[in-house]
Figure 1 (cartoon, rainbow, N blue to C red):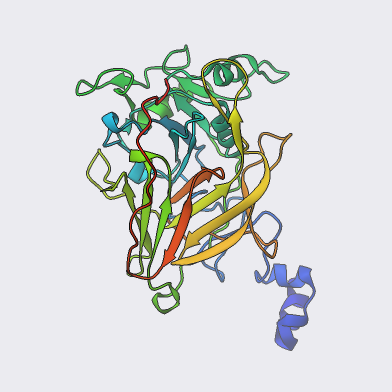
Figure 2: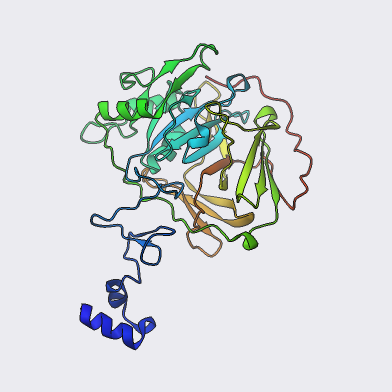
Length: 377
């Protein structure tokens, strides 16, 4: 086959059969991941001993690219700010945890491994579905009964938890959590990546990732980027978010409640390279507590902001198979490739304004009303 392939190459590669082009390394096999800058035309084989050396989420170079992700629930309460560890997350999700549109964050760590993460807050059931799709163990401080019932009672036929977690209030904590002194409970619960990784191992959880990762492509050349722009996400009051696109860095400077978002760990700015807005529906969950029920499974509109450009498409996640991750496709049905860098996802319903303003002149911030007084448990 190799001799035949070389002869065909000399004659003309474009007309060669698929099997020949694979032998020559010019066509990826099923399951291969595209890695910007990798040898062999940017292709990194997905099988054998050749493993991707980039984050499954950010696409950045990473020595722990096969390590299983850990997702941590983090509160947004103004009293708890500045929060620690968000600047180093590979991916962060924000969506409403209560029907008053108070949000909660879930920071996903694989290659980013901060020594301090917090404040850690309670889990919600819809975040469990997202974490499961990314094959992430979830770290949290208790949870709604909707979430805890699933974590503690839903088991595989072998008796193992379907939603593997590290819970500060349960026997899976394994020394991963602590409280700081500058804040009162429930805002002062903290952890760190190494603590969580140690707890994951102590609990006997699998350590290698099964999530295949998001596709990535090299960022646009400077002359191909947008000139500037502002993205406003209209969460209520102090939770409102603004991103200002900077063509020089190809990043989106994040402002939170009108203030530049700096990490509490080392004052590092939070500047994602990709911002994704997922449009969906939400409702009051059954039972007391005012908990939210967000549709993170199914399909709907998605908009991806990267390279100073706007990509409209769709999101999709299987309703039955919880291990299915969120997928993002363009209007033509092709998988959207993220540029390398941190990803922030905002999951919104029709009540939340999302406005992109093209150009270097920033508009006035959205009037999103007062900050709610109920931030949940």
